[in-house]
Image 1 (tube, rainbow, N blue to C red):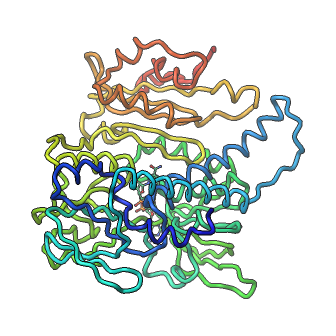
Image 2 (image 1 turned 45 degrees about the vertical axis):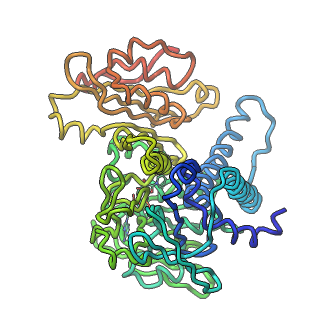
Image 3 (image 1 turned 90 degrees about the vertical axis):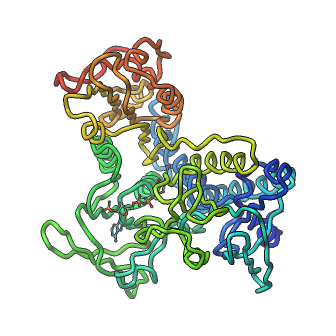
Length: 486
Ligand code: NAP
C-alpha cells in the first residue's frame, strides 16, 4: 500500500490545516477559504509537526524507552528474560513510520469525508484576500477568499554562528525519520525537545549527552525541572552543564568532533559523537509568506505574527493561530482548539474565544512531568511568599516496589493561595503516566478547584494519582514529605 506513498503524499500535503477546521465553515458561509500554505513542499505527510515530526513519533519512541525499563522490571515479576536484551532501531523506526503514514492517510480520508478541498501549493500572500500558490512543478494558482487563515507553524532552528552546525547536525525533524540508529548522540539545548529526545535515546540504550547552556526547562517550575534532569542523570544521560558548543568537525573516522566551552571554568572540551542533534528552539517561516509587504505586524525578534485574542492579525481578514502566533503556547491541542473556535467564529456560529490560560502539558523524559497552572516561582512572584501555601509529597508508585526501582524523583506539588479554601494556583506531578494523571486534574483546575476540593476527593487505590488528593504536608513546615503506608 505504501509503495504508492510519494504520489499520495503529493496530493495530500496541502490540506494540512483544513483538518482543524470544520467543513461546515465552508458550507455555511461560502465565503471563507481556509488555505494551507505549505512552505517546504513534500517533506512531511498530512498532519503537521505533531503527527510527522513531533508528538506522535516522540510518544511512540518514549514508549520504546519505557518498555526497556518494563523488560527489566518484568524479571522481578517472574518473567524469564535473558540478561542481555537489545533494542533494534530499524524495527522501531519502521513501525513508527508506518503509524505516522497511516495517520497521514486517515487525515486525508477525514478531509474527503468533510468535503474539504486540499491544494498542495507553496503559498504566499498577495493581498488580504488573495493567495498565490506555487506547485512543485512551478505552476501558479491564484486563490481568493474573504478570509485567510495562516497556520503554518514553525521549524527547528540551527545555530547560525557555529561552524559545522548545519552541515553535520540534525534536528527533531530528522531524528524521528532516521532509518538507522543515530548512535552516540549529543543533544544541544535543554528544553522540551532536547530532553525528550535525549530521554528516549538513552532509554533505548544509546550513549547520550545533553549540552545545557543555562538551565533546563526554562519557564517550568525549577524544582520539578531539577527532578527531571536528576532522573535522567541517574539513568545514564550525561549532562554538559553551562556549556556552549564552538564547532562541529567531521573527523577521518566519519565521527563528528564537537568542541565546546564550559562557561563556568572557561575550559575547552572535545568529544566525538555519531550524531549531533540541535534542539535550540523553533522559528516560524514568516518571511516566505510575504506578510511584511501586506503590513501584517510581526514580532521583530521571534518573527511570529502578532495576534489578538480572536486570532486576528493587524490586517483585517487575515488570521493566524498555532505556533506562528506570537505568545501562543507551541502545543498541538491549543492550536487545534484555537483553530476550531476561529472557524466557528468566521462561520458566524459562535463568538467564543480561545482560553489560553490553564493549559496543561507533559514532558516525556522518560520520567513524565505534568503540570497545569503556575510554577512555584511564578506563584511567589504574583502572590508573595506568604501569599501561597505549597503542599507536597514524595511517593513511591506501587509498581516500583516489587521491581525495586528508585522513586526519588516521584513527586507531587500543589501550589495554593494562602488562607480560605486555598484556591489551587498550580499542580505539578512527576511519575508514571503523568499525562494521564494530570488531564483529569486539569479539568478541576479549569473549574477553579481549591485545596479543600482536593482533599475532599476520594482517591482511587492503589494509584499514583490518588497521592494528589492526599497531599497534606506543607513545604513551609519542613516536615518529611515522604508518603508512608499503602
Ligand atoms: P525552546 O523551548 O525554545 O528551548 C530552546 C532550548 O535551546 C533552551 O534550552 C535554550 O537555552 C537552548 N538554546 C537556544 N539556543 C542555543 C544555543 N545557541 N546553544 C545552546 N543552547 C541553546 O525550544 P524547544 O525545546 O525546541 O521547544 C519548542 C516548543 O515546542 C516549546 O515551546 C514547546 O511548547 C513545544 N513542545 C512541546 C512538547 C510537549 O508538549 N511534550 C514537546 C516538544 C516541544 P536557554 O534556556 O538558555 O535559552
